[in-house]
Amino acid sequence: MADVELLYARDPRAVRTLLQSLPDWFGDPAAIESYTEAAADERYRSLLATRAGRTVAIALVARHFPESAELHLIAVAPTERGSGIGRALIDRLAADLRADGCRLLSVHTVGPSFPHDGYATTRAFYHRTGFIPLEEHHGLDWDGPTLILARILA
Image 1 (tube, helix red, strand yellow):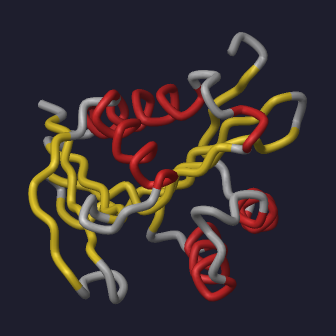
Image 2 (image 1 turned 120 degrees about the horizontal axis):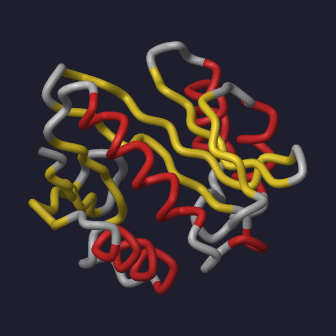
């Protein structure tokens, strides 16, 4: 991780490329387009992880209220999975949000009532990075179950 740089910047093209490399999570072209548009949208903070000038991971955060924020997207290149980059992005965001008075970071993902190995791995990642499950809703973000998790920052 020593050669990875975390920086706040916008790179919608890299977001599109990165999401296209993760078809098990981002196989829907409309979802890729939506996240790519969000990466260009000033309402989202965009934290990139770069290695040798190439974007290898991205996190987008929406600050809905002064006290809370939502992790809208986190994606790590397949070649970088397990390297600690995802945790580094989450920890940096959490520290920066906490320093700005934010007390809670939430995230939505596919719920456990939908059997999918990839999303089981995603939920385990969120658990390891300090998120706890709050509730599961059906039909919230898509036709299936959405799990809402949160990490207390303060």
